[in-house]
Image: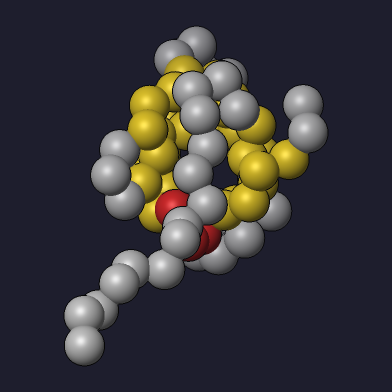
Amino acid sequence: MENTPKAQPTADVGDMIQVNKGMYKGFKGKVMTVRESSVIVEMGVDSDSGEPVRTVINHRNYKKVKA
């Protein structure tokens, strides 16, 4: 019997997602890059440096939301 991976929610570049696990739980962000098992998300802008705040979120730890 073969192990088939479960279908994971995958967002596309530009989609808005909401994190549902981990230290960023409840935060929303815009998908910048999609990887095999995760997405890179821009969460906002650092008020001190003006640089974008980005993080990596596993596919099972977010859900897509409407923009």
